Image (tube, rainbow, N blue to C red; front, side, top):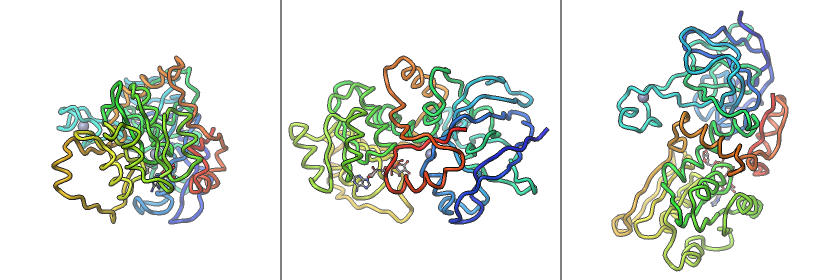
Length: 361
Ligand code: APR
Ligand code: ZN
Ligand code: ZN
């Protein structure tokens, strides 16, 4: 029987979100219903509500989630009822050229649930990033579920579903940070701090956090930054060169998504170093660089798409390290909130007061 549950929707452009009754259908072939336990509040949810992603209103928001599988459809083999899972928004096909070439994060044919969740009047909902998890239950494709160790609390585990994975992956998967490397991270929000953690996990010797907000720099130090630079007060390129014996860093990670910070990352790098863009720019943003500098400085200019992650490999690995006490993912949970508090969480995110607010369901 289709189930009626409470969910948080964005009904129209820029209107405040609403807690309302939604209908979750029985899972069809390859589909899974998950009892959501926790879901982080991400910038992308706010972008949906502002109409910045597309105009397929109403949206069912939320996508950084963990929960327990409550029903499975025909042909579901990857998870079973009772499994504790983290959801991901890139369930890859394994068959297309990108997948076969070992770059599944660029998969051409990612899978979401085929059926739609609806309002009680039958209006179809568009789930944010194909998930929609500010709800007591949600319907996803089996490949969107990764079974993980129950030892990680849901508010922690769910964060791997988006921002925290993007940051850690930018360092370890895209940047290829390795032991002894020097690393700079521009923008110490949730994504940048996760990149700091990834660099620490990979054994970086020096990790320099750069931000314009001292509060953010203090948090980055707690997560693993060995040095910090306030780029409103100090030229970050000069400061980074000074901190690295005049060379610049091996890997510079841009986690803001702005031309000026990308330029700083480009020049803060040692010769033959790597720049990773994980902050998401807007369509109007452009940057010009002297081609001679691109040529002369060598190295690699990369971007990181969802941390270039493979959820089935990376989620259990990172959750395992957390459960063993070797990394502390709970540092990203600034506050736990109720399902009715998403709009307030957007305000706090906007004011820069939180790394992540997590809705507990
Ligand atoms: N220089 C340095 N830091 C800056 C600058 C700047 N010019 N402008 C903003 N920042 C800092 C902010 O102070 C904040 O700490 O960048 C950080 C951005 O963090 P959040 O707003 O918390 O965003 P986050 O969730 O970390 O995402 C960062 O990655 O996934 C993308 O869309 C996301 O583009 C966004 C980026
Ligand atoms: Zn594919
Ligand atoms: Zn997100």
